[in-house]
Structure formats: structure tokens, C-alpha cells
View (tube, one colour):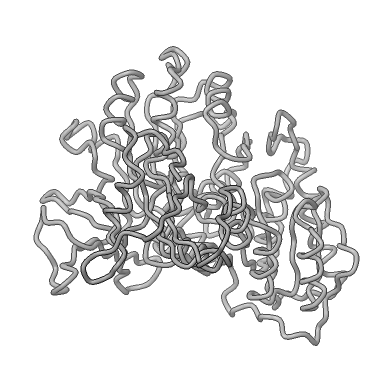
Length: 506
């Protein structure tokens, strides 16, 4: 797999070179409209100009609410070009939740698209002395906000970079800082995204969300080679299919949950005739769906595995290995690469287990340091060194590519004034793999909230992807003999529904 040949360049130099190249060349298409590199540079320069005008120095941390849009992409490139230290804030949450995160981070400035500057966000920025910058699309000051150099802002670390939100592979999702040296090594020198089976003239589809590692990992190799990008606000079958039918790529990729969506949509095989192979990641792919997709479309689907804590992808099935082993390794995510090492640990004894034995996966990724990283993934390593992902050891729910810790959702639900106890579990869903559902007990004399009210309440504190699809009010939650919540019994309350999304049954 070819790395980006950077000739010793650093990532900021590569990005600067992209921004300063021919301004008339196409950079990104969004909702049918192309922006050229001159446009991208103007937006990036406008953000940096506002920061400097307000006195926000290079030692300050910049908060950024990122969504997939040309202005956010331009702002990101500007930050990297200037080696600004940036803390990503999840975009798909309420204004109240964004405000709490801003207050927790204590950033010197917050950059966000204009739609995110609700009163509560602006007021929080003003209270902590943070400068507000709205992307409209060029940067504008948010009235009522100013950078207060005397306020207790967080200082940037010596090695500046991006603080990305982890998916939770090694535990509770958290902000994970990657300095620019590590980002360059992981996302350019060792990135699978640097290998593209399309010609340089063919635009590349980008649908991974900015703010976490998937979006950055997929986007930066394209910038380093100045590839034109077709950007989707979020993945959709229609958006992906339009791209495939228009540009006829030989290589493509999708979230694991999307393969079933394409099959369900009964997309004609001739629409995908140009594609020879595809990548899948972010969550396990059902082997039945995997086989059905390959059989229907004649496309080789290659699985991969990675996480923010590892600096990105650490294993991927290759065309060479697939040709050598055929379907014998179909459900493997491949072998470790780029000096990465795997081992499987017995969760009780901490002993390293022999091949073909299931246990807890640990990863040693040299780009992140010499230490072993303990995951919460159940896995198997076979005698040939191929890794098989067997699920989660922590009971997490994988909703498409999003990992949901049910305890976190239940804890927030239990803060509702009408609810005394709650339990959240995952149930099968053919499209997304799993979806969260919730059962709860009411407080004495409390009026039962509607599902709409519960959803609105949860959105104040947790991402929209974590909201249960169904709720059930109960006189008493199922419990074991030791009075622990009975997860299996709770799951049976909602039923399998033959793989279809559950419906409310309150």
C-alpha cells in the first residue's frame, strides 16, 4: 500500500501547499455546487485573520464545531496550516450540550457554522471570555463575544494537534489528542486512504463526519494530493449511488451498516458495475450480508479495523490475502500492518491466549508509543495472524458506526424528574445492526412522559445517535436474584422483530 510521498514534508506544509496552489482548480463539491481552491483559501484566511485580530495567539486552544461542509473543511485546513491546537466538539447535539462542552474545554475561541450560534452558546462563550467566530461561510465575529486574555483558558500542549472524540473502543468516549507529527505518520505515511484505485482526475467521495478520526483520516490524504472531493453532509444510499453512477469509480467504500441498505434498496447490479472492490469499517459487517452483497454485485468487500486510540486503521484485509485465501478468511478484518502487533488476553487471568482462542484484544501501535492498548473488543487471532472481531466485552451497542454505552444513556434518563430507574439495551436491527431501547419505572405519582418528551430531554445531554428508538414504562424493571437489572429479560420485552426496528410497546 503506497504512502503519500511527502519528501520529508510536515503535514502543515502539505496543507499550506494545497491552499496556495492554483486557485482555479476544483476543491470540493457540496450539494451540487463546486468550490475552488481560491474559495477554500479565502475562508481559511478569514478564520485566521479574525483570530489574530482578536489577539488569540498560537498557544491558545481553539474549539471547533465541525460538520461536513466546505466552510468547515476550509477552516480545518487553515488550523492545520497554522499548526493551531484544536478541540473538536460534536456537532449533532443540542445547544445546551455544546455550551457545557465549551465551558468544560475552556477554549479561547469557538469556531462554528452560523446555525450553531444559539443564544445559549453565545452566552456561554461571553461568560468564559471566549471569542465567537461564525462561518457564514467566511469568518465573522459573533456579537457579544470577545477574547479575554485574562480569563482561565486552556493552554495548548507543547506538541499541538487535534483533540478528536473517540468512538469508545477502549472505554467511555473521550477527547483524544493527536499531535500533528502523529497525524502525519498515521493519516498520510501509513494511511490506507492514500491508496486510491481511481485516476487523479476522478473526484473522491467523502462522507465520514469531521470531528472524529474517520473524517480526518479519510480527508487529509486527498488534500495532500489535492484531489477534488465530492462531500456529503452525511452518508446516504442515494448520495453514494449518485456518485457511483456519475463517476464510475473502480474502488469505493461504505459504513458496514450501508451494505444491507443497498441490498434492501434493490439497487440494480449494473449501477455498481464499475466497482471492483470496496472497503468496510467502523463496525462489524454481518457475514450473511457480506456474502449476499458480493454474490449480487460481484464486488470484493475488504474489512478493516481501527480506532482513534490507535491513530487510525491497524488492520485491513488486502486484495492479495483475499485472492490467496478466498472465502476462508471472509470475516477477518485482516492482519496487523505497519509494525502493529496484536495479542489476545484472558480477561480473568491476564494471560496471553493461544491462536484461535477468544479473549480481549490488546494492540501495540508504534506510532502511538511502545505501550499495549487494552480494548473492550472480543477478538480471535488465527494461526495465520488474521484478526476476527467478535463483538464487545462491555455490552456496548453498535448502532451503525456509532458505539453507544447503554449505562451512559440510562444514567441521563434517570435524571428525568418523572423517572426513578431505567435500563437501556440493544436489540437487533437489520439496517443498523443494533438500536437502543429503554425501559423505565416512574416515580410515585409522576405523570408518564411521552416518547417525544423523553427524546427531547435526552438530546440536551447526549448525541442524537444515542437516543432510544423505543421506550417501555413498567411497574417494576426485570431484576435478577441479586437484584441487579436483568439485561436479557429487558431485551426480551422488546423482542427481535425479525431484525426490523422495534416499535413502541408501552
